[in-house]
Amino acid sequence: MTGPGTGPNAGHGAGGETSPPDVSLAELDEITRYFPRIWAEAAHFFTETLYEDIALDDRTIQLILCSLLAMRGWTTGLRVHAAQALSVGATADEVRAAVLLSWAVNGLSSAAQGLHLIEDIVQTAGKGPQDGS
Image 1 (spheres, rainbow, N blue to C red):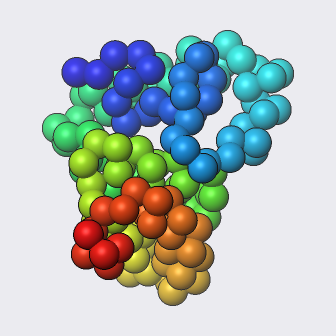
Image 2 (cartoon, helix red, strand yellow):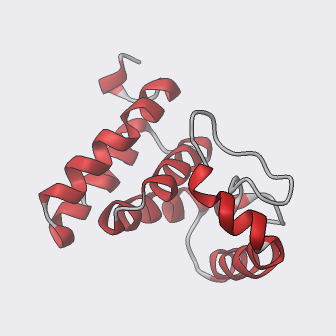
């Protein structure tokens, strides 16, 4: 089980949590400023409960979220969860592959855009054979 501020939902930049490196959370400024309680309590409680109650490990959850967020086209969410996937043991190639899978459901544009959006994060992580490690 993961506790508050840890696990798949950590790092959203609210409630004292830290964000992954090189990920701007500016898109979340208004919701965290004007609705801090909803963001800190309701949104995080929902996702933490969801992640704790499903039979998937943190790495798998983060990879699935990367694919879903690429399909949705949410830049901030994709970048946050790509960094989180790496932090819980996914390789750069696994994160890239998860984003590429969005192509199967949502078309080439979501995969191409998603791969472009995360490349600096996976390159910085220095993981995976395509990164020279």
